[in-house]
Image 1 (cartoon, helix red, strand yellow):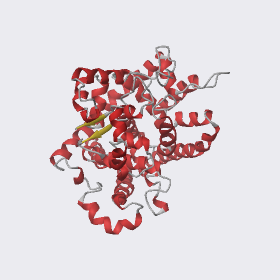
Image 2 (cartoon, rainbow, N blue to C red; image 1 turned 120 degrees about the vertical axis):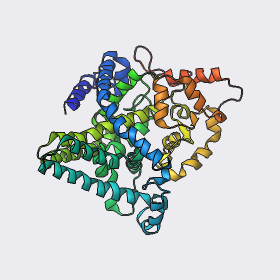
Image 3 (tube, rainbow, N blue to C red; image 1 turned 135 degrees about the horizontal axis):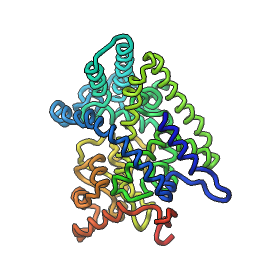
Image 4 (cartoon, rainbow, N blue to C red; image 1 turned 90 degrees about the horizontal axis):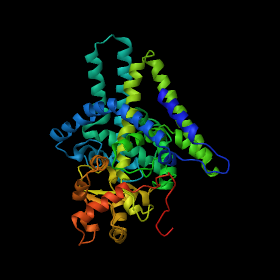
Length: 440
């Protein structure tokens, strides 16, 4: 709550109407005011001193389970579309989903909308009724975290991906109307997701501006080969994740966007009401609320900000709006959850079903080649984040799919191209927006 208050104060100081001037966006603030950027970077760094080790203890160690127990196979995860469990349920579940490929979604709803909350409230009851030693509390939390996050974060990845997909569809994933919005308005509560973030903030703002200046989670305000800049970006993402910047942006922006505020305010109210209810039901146990509700939100904020930093790691120095450069595509990585690695396709066709992404990618092959598109092989979003934020341009070049580059391009030229694209920003040194292209 203190952090929320602090962030709001920062926003209201700088995001406001000035007579005769355009409202400052978060992206412009970070580019124009170094002090704000560095204060936010410090806040992000201090948070990572806590969040980093905890994520290593959970998400990091859960990778070993995925490797040694699941054989590093996505299909070994029960909620995977191609898992044996999903296949066995297909005949029964097909009647409930709009696309037969989404039959696994019902298993996901049962597992994380039914079993996980039972686990959650059972632990709440036990911690309220019984005096338990620390190691028992830790064992319960760790077991709960393993089930919530899953081997190699696969449960976490599928839940957040389905929240994302659900936020983009108007008809819903399921034919049963009462099941639609199950991910954003129920399951997401246990994963630190605030309702309205995907359906409004993400779908309307992020996809409306495509990482350009008005995008509340744009990475373009500073070079992306800097961990300091990412620490500041973490705070920028948290403001968006909490729906604060989205609500302010929709209110002070074009009037046709104000109709979405009601949904977002309802989502914020609903989320904090749920947190307050859990606080009361747990016997006013602040530790329980923190570890089982607040920590998952901090975890989600951190993880998703890393992923978005990698999705939009590059900018074309000659055309900041060149989507073939600014959104990446990944192939043959260790995991491609519901074709999320076709990130450019997703920006071009945000409402299309995930099974259509490979076909839509093939549709624009000429444009990919002509623009030397950001296409990479044998990697994943978190690795791209690490390589980008630490400025390891040669290793990024090793991952580049050369099928989309000129045949005569040397390694040195490719490294220089990557470096320019990572260090290109939307703003000049004064914080003023650069022209969209060199010509205009």
